[in-house]
Amino acid sequence: MLKNRAVSQTILVTGAAGFIGSHTAEALLARGDRVIGLDDFNTYYDPERKRSNLREVRESVGEDCSFDMREGDFRDRDMLKELFAKEDIDTIVHLGAMAGVRASMHDPHLYLDVNLTGTLNLLDCARDHEVANFVFASTSSVYGATKVIPFVETDMCDRPLAPYPASKRSAEMLGYSYHHLYGQNFTALRFFTVYGPRGRPDMMPYKVLDNIFTGRRVPLYNRGQMHRDWTFVTDVVAGITAAVDRPLGYEAINLGCGEPSLLADFIERLEELSGGKANLHDEPMPGADIAYTYADLSKTRALLDYQPKVSTEEGTERFWQWYKKYVIEA
Image 1 (cartoon, rainbow, N blue to C red):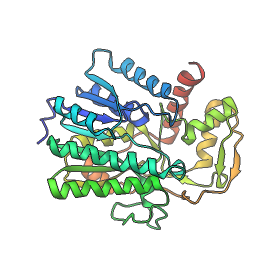
Image 2: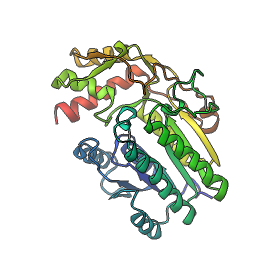
Image 3: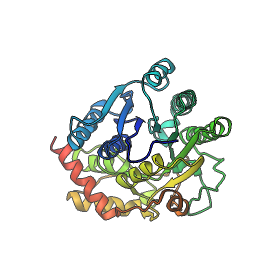
Image 4: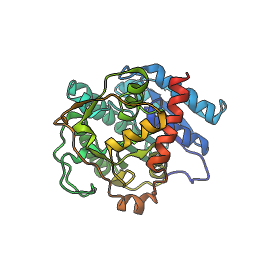
């Protein structure tokens, strides 16, 4: 059983220096939990950006918070065994991963090693040390080119279009195995196009502003005629923390906004806010991509009492203000 919510938990957050991980750590610390952060600071993008994320967290919650940040790779089984032997961990929030649908096509071995074998290592530690709850970051891309819209969790999700979603779907299924065999509570949260402050430099909102202010070459697939269920990071974090507090046995749950909008309109909004014009070059949509994402939130509301609060208009404004302060003026 988890400790009563009136008593703080000790929560391991993998990928804690990253985009969603740093916001999750911040939210858990702000409510009084002890957070052990784990991140390997790999070079998928500049590690200094991740260290800047951690500085923002400490600025927000204060230096005296219960935040133990560690550098390490969860593929290192010996390191994990030592960590779990020393710490009484209540919950694992596994956000660390090799991200990116298109990037995964170039190094599928790395993606499966990190995203599947790394998850297996953590599940073994959860089993051996009776960790009460395991919250896993999955992705809407597990739905592939589904014809079921909005995307609903009862979809089979058995036709992933690239190694990244294949690795995430495999990890979801592994989580079920550990639930079935060992009673492990495992909640897979399928994220839909998360954006906001501290967003990764390889994600479209960041790339559009980089194009405007630095001239960075950025492709625009299908002339921007692609709908995305843009979901602001604080809404996603609210879903994560709700899953932390609700051991559900085994569940896969969508975390989106439930209001898809056109990529071209999203770009136009960033142009209006920044006062600049993006110079993007047209390219056809890659075979690993899809034209539409749309989260059905019925199950999410029922199980997590989830209600997204940040509109695209507000979210883009908040992202732009962060980019201006921490990227342009830094």
